View 1 (cartoon, one colour):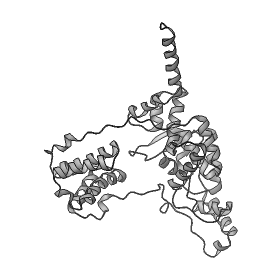
View 2 (cartoon, rainbow, N blue to C red):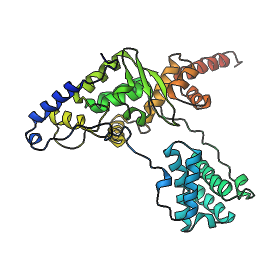
View 3 (cartoon, rainbow, N blue to C red):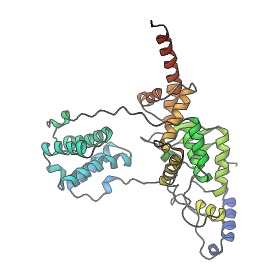
Length: 353
């Protein structure tokens, strides 16, 4: 029975490829490296442990970890809220359950005025404190909950023009770096979403790209251009990893044979820092001080909007829960600015001189 997955590997072909690689490497015949299995391959760069399994300095923090496990499904979310309580514990060097209302108020003044936390971080700390001090300890009568107010700063994300994106990709010489960066821009992916892709997330004949277990435990399906699918096929045929699309290259010889062998036997995807450092160097050469990998995702949404795509379509492609998160790109489109400029010229032209 023929597999419907265009990247599926027949076991016999995989064994032949591994035998060929061992034959090309002199030391591999003496100490062969076993091929990676599903149980040894990680599809994400960082694994978040359930806070219930942490070593808790106080019983109150252990109970808080259990409460988080009951309320949230994602370990990343549990870790984020538990971390806020741990920071409070480290700041006061005592059991957080013994803190008073005035001490908690002083802590929020400290992170706002001294540490200069962003509004979103302050709100996360406030949400964690509510769950700990109100839901767990019963301090609902504290007035500090109504006194803390945070408002997001009206800052617009950095967006590159199409020419700047072209110049940026042109500076990336190695294909193993240029391919994931191009995929991030063309499909509007987050960096973690891109590097976690497996061969089972690609459905080339139907031009579909599956994003699984993304932010907020959400799945979504994106259109995949045919030319990019063919490029991903050529990239995979170089390393032929049994699961990962962008495996970690590791350290060692830079010959194509040695690189393909290490990538084919990798147990985790390419680290995020590899691409982030590359973008830092490229943006300095192009004089783009605000450009990051996430800027490519913002550029994707802005360029689609300029081309006439509907705002709700962009919302689904980006995986935004709220349309308000997508509406920020209305302020970034070049076409919107030009339309407003033409209207303002007309208004000014008819005024008396």
